[in-house]
Length: 187
Image 1 (cartoon, one colour):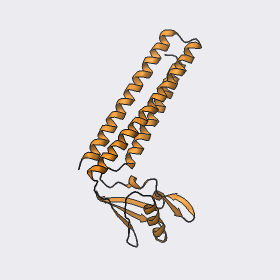
Image 2 (tube, one colour):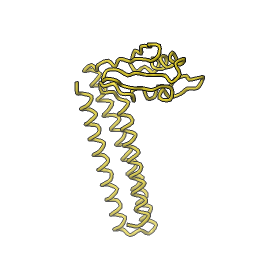
Image 3 (cartoon, one colour):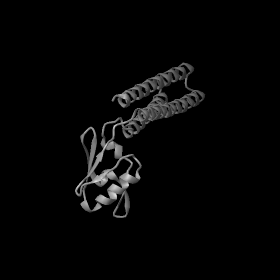
Image 4 (tube, helix red, strand yellow):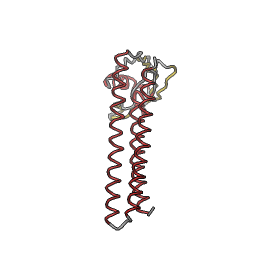
């Protein structure tokens, strides 16, 4: 393969890898019934007048599968942190215990589990679209390289490699979606 073809393939793989990483981050935010510090990612706290991610204001731990403990670095900001968790609309009821905030993670109902599975499938489909978009740009680059003088059989080989790469990443997405779905449905 020519250097241009290899570069085209590497760029496509990099885009596809980013799509998988995004999918994994999204899945961390979807709770599967077990407490996880990532459930609070995205919560922003008014910290000395600046909107700050909660992870930068507190230690967040999960001592058991049903609760999250938030320990502020600065005890005087505990009320702002509690307010931010409530305002995030995560369905949690934080309990301020003076030095820390305790959050009981309620068990998921069957209906809620089904909603989460739908969301997981939707996020999986969006990621597949991202993979297909990466394939499309790589194929456009392949056609451009062929017009610029790349051998026809070389262009065909590159096209085949792009498709193999796409198939591998689509398979990864499907297995990640399946694993997350199983995790959510496990009571």
